[in-house]
Amino acid sequence: MNWKLEVEKILPRVQKPARYAGGELNSVVKDPAGVSLRFAFCFPDLYEVGMSHLGMKILYAQANERPDTWCERVFAPDADMEALMRERGIPLFGLESRDPIREFDLIGFTLQYEMSFTTVLNMLDLAGLPVRSAQRGAAFPLVVAGGPCTCNPEPLADFVDIFVLGEGEEVNPELYDLIIAAKKEGISKGELLRRASLIQGLYVPSLYDVSYKEDGTIAAVTAREGAPARPAKRIIRDMDGVFYPQNFVVPFVEAVHDRAMVEVLRGCIRGCRFCQAGFIYRPFREKSPQVIDRDGRSLCETTGYDEISLSSLSTSDYSRLEELLDKMLPWSEKGSINLSLPSLRIDGFSPKLLEQIAKVRKSGLTFAPEAGTQRMRDVINKNITEEEILSTCRTAFEGGYCAVKLYFMIGLPTETEKDIEGIVDLAQKVVDLFYSLPDRPRGKGVAVTVSLASFVPKPFTPFQYEPQDTEEMLREKQHHMISYVASKSKKIRINYHESKTSHLEAVLARGDRRLCAVVEQAWKNGCRLDGWSEHFDHQRWVDAFAACHVDGGFYANRTRPYDEILPWDHLDYGVTKSFLTRENQKAHCDATTPNCRLQCSGCGANKLLGRACL
Image 1 (cartoon, rainbow, N blue to C red):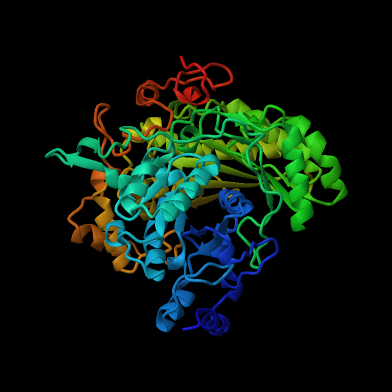
Image 2 (cartoon, rainbow, N blue to C red; image 1 turned 30 degrees about the vertical axis):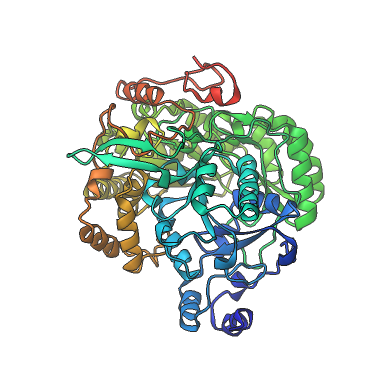
């Protein structure tokens, strides 16, 4: 069958056919006969989401810099496209060539969120491959996965051959070299996996045996065939020297974040106890203003974007931010290019910074107090005060802004009803502040939006030991919040996430290998694209847990003792378990820890850079 012709026939019958067309500006097409490795880079979500992801842009461009490698993009088809593909027998294909990805050497998935797990299985099945690695036999392709969810890869351990731990720019080329050499030598897949396990940053789950105690907790994780007892993540030491693309593929369909992006730093100095990214991306490393400015200017020239985002976990923590803006604003203003600064800290928001960003940014501002009372902010180690929150809002209002979005979490450890009501009370103080200012924008009302996320305990955080509130508890808190707002103010708008999704995230985030059967059963029940409300079907997951005789509450709603072996304890992400335990204990004493710039807290991550840790 001519797959490419079949694809052409069905594209007019689907919504947004440009998702599957390929041929975008700056996409890379090579002669398959002229390369030694074909790599299908899969994002287990729709095109618009995947094309927004910076990590995929970096690794796609880096792989294609190699003459011996051709990397193609693959995204999950929406329901209409999937139905036609299955009806016509069209296998999942690479966008650049439209060749079936089952013919490639390497299939790689980026795991950005737990709700993508069933989509990974669906994409393997659409490719015409068995979903379980043990059933794929000795032939290629090799199935690999990376991204933040690989800090606990166990719920996908039965489906993936190799997990990439940490940052891929250094370890990925070593994996490419290993596969190319294995093909030339004709070594077995088993030997290839054994060799891969010896490369720092690669974890081969099939080389580790997991045993369990009678109570369901883990007894031991044992390495086999010479694999390291504690596989360690890989990090980039020199941020100025690391590869960065000089162009991006420009999508045909508007992406979720449709703009150029330039990375300013990695890691975070803050240590918010709920935030997984703040710990797994440690240690903190910055790029120089010269390199950021060069890369940003190049991307705008090669893509035609009129907006560029300074990307990081906390852009206002960049130590040379004002110097950087002084470099970038002249050419961005001249070219009418909007300069976006996401992830601004409340305590890093100065009048001068407001003056600089106001030159190009006219939308509302977003801040994340995370909790409504000072006690709760101390528990989570947010290290900001109510005075700082109100002072920042004052600066914004006096600078001409009249819309503020505030992010909070509910269900945090030790939370009380007073803490929940404190969220509304704080938002009302922001409203009152606006109307008290003589220099506020005239003729306009204030808009304060409160966005509520449900707390999800994650691996490698001080709250990895904590139970998540049950769905009923979260719903009660959400309803109390809504009624409390109604009694206080008409100027505050509340948005919140569905508690069923948050519960499932907690189960998958802290799960072990016994969840592999649940994920597979959920996929067989029809689950895929679970991050989208129109696709998510909670009952299918309920049925999957029941069929596999697995209790999701065991993973989501149970307190872990400090000495329990957690499913991810055999992986080394730099931050030590003893540090996370100390931080958890401090949380229960309402005690804070200074940020890394003020004082090293001895988390262990500096050892990855060859530096001493306390």
